[in-house]
Image 1 (cartoon, rainbow, N blue to C red):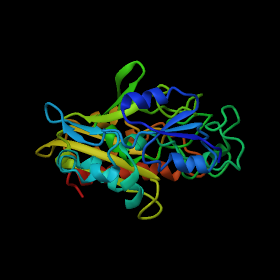
Image 2 (image 1 turned 45 degrees about the horizontal axis):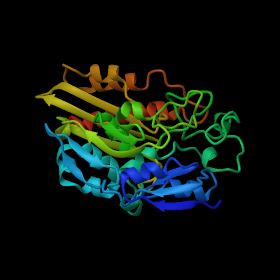
Image 3 (image 1 turned 90 degrees about the horizontal axis):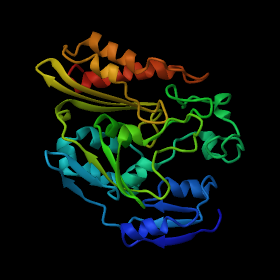
Image 4 (image 1 turned 90 degrees about the vertical axis):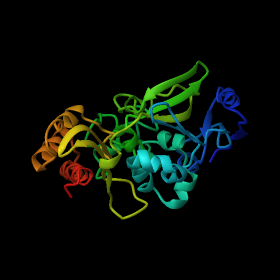
Length: 328
């Protein structure tokens, strides 16, 4: 591990100023970044500690939405009464992630910024990795790729985003609020993470030196009929092979609104508007759920070892919709 400088920011403005120095990286809970630094994957020259900034509160927005500070821990968000009441989908997703110890440390902003995962990216014993060294190749494509992407991948990278929280936020139409040298801007969660394309080293659309200060959730009517389903190799402390965040607004037995997001299948949470629209104005029955599930995985391109994910994702969508809609 290379030597680096450390600064603790006393304000957002100070954090942004410190972040302008070469090789600077923000650090909150450190649950992902420190692992990458110790493994030699990340080599920051300066760490700017933002964990003490006054960004750890949940506040109500006009109309019934919520603003969640970027420095709130995953555990505190999952346990907050307003989150549990209005956005149980988010609370479920957070409680499905990592372990209690990590949830106590990991922050909302850090969860959004964690790197897409792949054994070949995390293990520097493999010299080639387009995320670590652009242009060097993607060993996962010809290697062991059971956990890798089936949607949205490219010839450059087939890694997947590991965040459970982001999948729920995508289904809830969340907005990421960031501040940088040019002021504050807002990015819809669907536009926050990037697909790999030709630049897999870039996981998000944040500009250099921008700091996430909050996540905002619009008012939602999905709370009574929502469910987060995570399918993984073991019952806890494991990334999702496939996950589903499903939310419905029901009028009797008829679907009036629907949101479905898949995790564990792409570089970013995966939504398909046509799949959601296929449910509208009809009863939530087996045929409707199956049609939506098929549309969610349409165009999937599995690798040699993960073709099972296509059927797993399809069945997971059907199961999550069934639980959310009271069919199961």
